Image 1 (cartoon, rainbow, N blue to C red):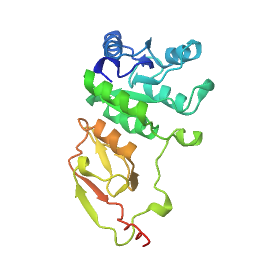
Image 2 (tube, rainbow, N blue to C red; image 1 turned 120 degrees about the vertical axis):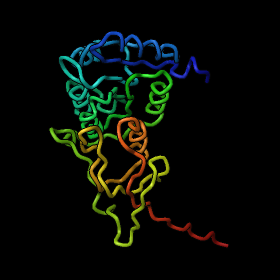
Image 3 (cartoon, one colour; image 1 turned 180 degrees about the horizontal axis):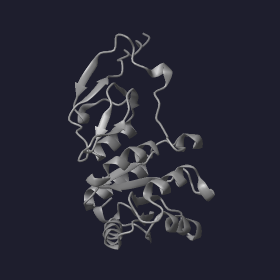
Image 4 (cartoon, one colour; image 1 turned 30 degrees about the vertical axis):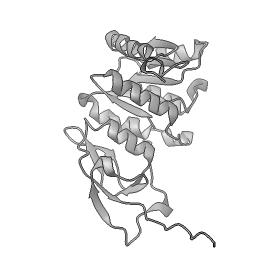
Length: 233
């Protein structure tokens, strides 16, 4: 598939209260072959567009800070299925350095991906393609209440003999257990609270945010290696 048709037959909703940002993202999506793109200036308008549109949107791309209904409120409405919204709709969140304190909320609401401003064509399209191929699993509605959290299952806590390692983010193995909190921004805000399993989806989103947080080293316990059973003779 060529660069100009990576999003063939796909439909998108772009939500931002700054027109020039919407125009830029719409241009990038159409250059990548999007079949249709609808714009909205805030969350309420976005919900209205979803309700009245004849098309089913493959993903929503939204800013966080907006006049009117902001991006976190829109994301929560989608994840809670408010007004019949499709709960597992992929949502990509636009964020900037000055908005770092809102990122943890978007992560807890299971935003599928993050795009750090200023928005570049390739980072945007790469993340869109990624979430269309592999969405973040969503949780029960009650998880997305006022203070949604991601808890480590009891049976997945580090074993007493687990070895804690300091590993660069890019080398962390899928399903490792984070043993030290990750913070973001200045002043520092909690992004991910330990302990938590670093799934593939979580690692992807942390890499999206590499420009906003110091992800040079993560403190983790790697998943245990379980030898394969011998093949019967």
